[in-house]
Image (tube, rainbow, N blue to C red; front, side):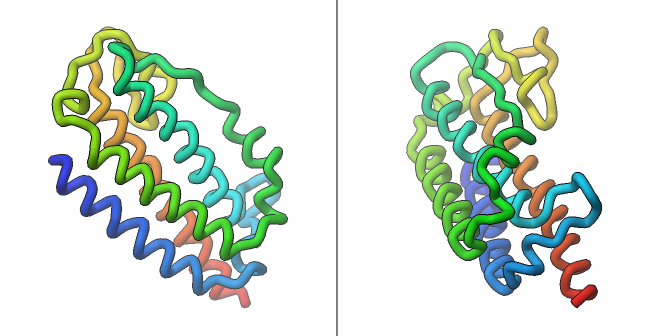
Length: 168
């Protein structure tokens, strides 16, 4: 997907999801589909954590020749931040605003940096759609992977929202 097409798609996804999620009550957003499964609040919290970690990656990739970054303990981050107890409208606003900023970072990254082939990376460990360590990767691919991961979780949250609305 071209950079402009990806940014347009990403912006549309964030805007539409934020609009949809603002309609949910706190009770709907905190409903767990099953014990041990994330609620919509926790999914959005995870997406905030993903934005924070990828923010660092998107910036550092402009300053180094590799795509080697630390990972993070996703479940521990979600539980440690107590997203279940957070104010729902604030979570939605933070998530949408953080993605708006990431789109700005991507929009202003030079195309040569986005397309630079990086033989050294750990996207086989970090990528939602992993890249074999023996294959080069690009920052552009990492960004596309971030958006694909975001869309996966938005679909998951929308499914839960439909169940919550039907159950109330």
